Length: 97
Image 1 (cartoon, rainbow, N blue to C red):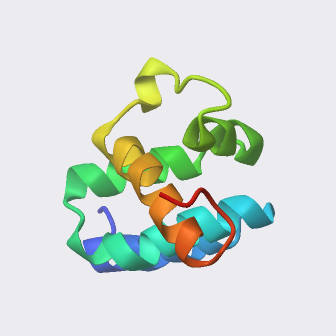
Image 2 (image 1 turned 45 degrees about the horizontal axis):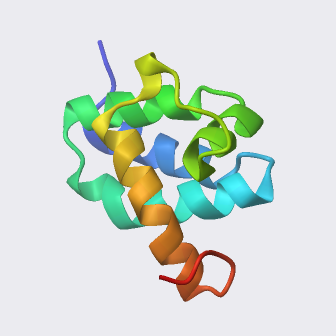
């Protein structure tokens, strides 16, 4: 029996904020808080797959330091990338504009 979407959302929220890499925590935690409640089952799966990746790899894809591998180049990754500059700029620690 699979877990309910609400239980999965709670687990993903914890994982997004407790990466062990502060920059990833801030990006993924904020993104999760602002978006997880509206994610479909497919989007939850995509987000969970991203959270399964190594922090340095995931952070590199988000900031564009490395290209995102095809299997992780999903609509959720696009949303995380688009979200990051706007949210970080609001906190004074990202691109402005």
